[in-house]
Length: 448
Image 1 (cartoon, rainbow, N blue to C red):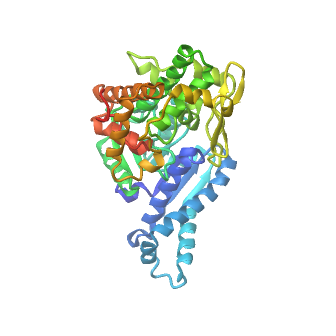
Image 2 (cartoon, rainbow, N blue to C red):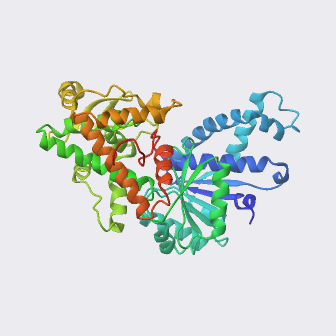
Image 3 (tube, rainbow, N blue to C red):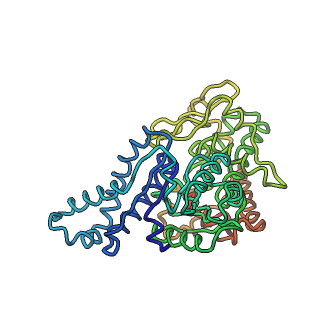
């Protein structure tokens, strides 16, 4: 089949979810654009949006409609060319509305997996559960005479494992979008030893059409992104526990300190505990459990995560994208308190912030907010000056920042040494593009 023929019949599993909705949107836009080309106007295109939640599918239409308008506005010149034979479409708003209707017409929401029995490609974006994924992939494969190609959005499960368990004979590739797919430029591309070369070539062409930055990863649990993030998160948790004991302070105060250091001193968009909350405490714990069996020399597990979940605190996000409370409490997007696990309550930051800041010590004079750094043309020079200053400071804040930087570097280098990443630059690209860090973990800013 040609590229266009493959995309004539597509299914997205988990289409109403956080990741699935974005994947559906991008795929529907690409399919809709193909359908508008003169040579394809006599062909039938369909994208099945499959999800068990019928109510969620109802809300999917509004999301796609809003986002499709943004896409249309950016390519109005091309759309005018595609609709040049339509005498009834004069104004830009008329063309845009017509395009939105076109995209929505291509999407077929459904709650039954049987719709995937006739498609050429399946994009799988269900929850990160190996058993569920293999069950669905196997069911489709056994009932689809076309023998479709499968794209899985897994962020941690080895592709080889899924391929073997579902019996896909190399018709599976890891195509890991970052959240949110419609905004994030990064895609991790993971092929197993079974993945067919023609599937990989199609995936690269598809990614190019979506204007994604592709970073290849070897087929090892967690890949590059979670390979770094899970270890980075575990280190942050362990650091908070360590300084709580050594400084004889409550764990919630230590969590606040580590979150502040990992955001402000390291110039990241979020502190590590805020990032754990954003992804979801339950999701982080589960990904660690998926990765752990494949690790020989380390244990990715945190008792603190277990205890938080036992308390019913999961973090994550609401349907509108706002943050749920986790390690930190959020009000109108701002952190206002930290969870005290020993007393099962949130402690307002105002009650301990001054003591925490005194322990951190003097802030670096060269400290620059993340929002400012990412817009700087000379950010490498500014970051080099900042970290040089931190390396020469004698404060708790500087000590913690350096420990964090060196551990991040160690994690990144190990990913390359273990063959998970092909080269240093791949790790840096994932962290800078997928996690919005202004610099990669492998750098020359300090002595490692």
